[in-house]
Length: 443
Image (cartoon, rainbow, N blue to C red; front, side, top):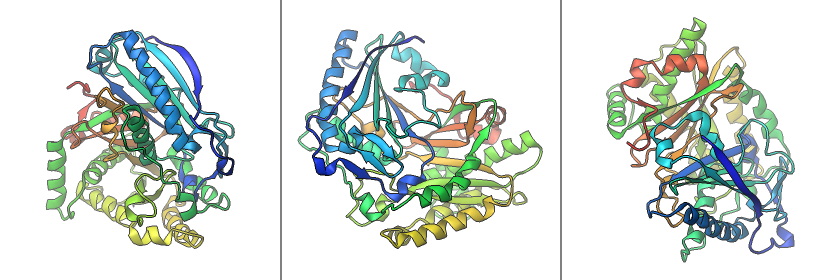
């Protein structure tokens, strides 16, 4: 697949940021993240029969609306100053247009994971988003058929997946000329103040086991439809789980099968850890709405010792229990200057077992119920949204990215594992009884 970048420019805010807003302090929760960017690609078919020229002309409206949106989301028009702040200097978003010498439907027949990241403004890596880096980066990909894929990389130092959706919602409202102008909630730094880098330093040891120096990482999609998820829920409920969610049952099954793949590869059962960042927005008072920017989340973990039995329903209960710890009470205790104590206590709980020896760590990132399939710039909703792809990386992060299917009831699990373990996982009969492996998004 040949992709030709035909233009690069900076999209600055339509109005300059006032002098008193030139520096945006990050919140302490922004120190939780490991990845430098939140990458997302939204694919739009040519439903109106537009020519390639007309498809390229859509970019003009995108640029104009992006410029206006960046005025409201002014920190996203700046550059990273350091780990504690954003320089709101109105440098603007990096914006590129690329021509894809292929039809969109041809690509979607059987998406090649090794090519997906080429639709992003740059190849994601574990480096980047350092001092001086732009916060917002966009690539608009125009296919031969007039279809469009919008690739977005926003610095993870200031946004999580929910905040990325908020930005996209504001941008699409502006692009469609909607009456509602979305103003982001920028109160997170006052609720979760960051005076230094204590949290980042505390979590470095805990996050390092997620990274493995291996030959390469590979990515596969396991798609669970609504019927399969209902069956998994029923099975977990029969064995004592109380009203398990979609994310809980899918995560537990993948965790179980990933542990089995690891055991086959190394010859023995290692202790294993499930980690999930939990969105705190719905657990906070109205002073921090769903439209908040920053990483308003906290990580929770569940551990499976090497000598324990790894039953599906048992893992569902473990997953549910660890998620339930991040409740309204924790969210309230974590706020303000005294929030330090609640966070330190939580880190101590997570860190005790990780210090005991070799452990498999699996990071689950759920984008479910985020609303990405509602992102409409004026030419309809996306036909597909692709997740985090680590394919081909020399450093492996065991990350599983969960996204809604287009109908909203199923889940696409984008699983990134060591190549040898993935070969075993993709042949796991228990997993394949509930999930389809890399089906076409056109189905």
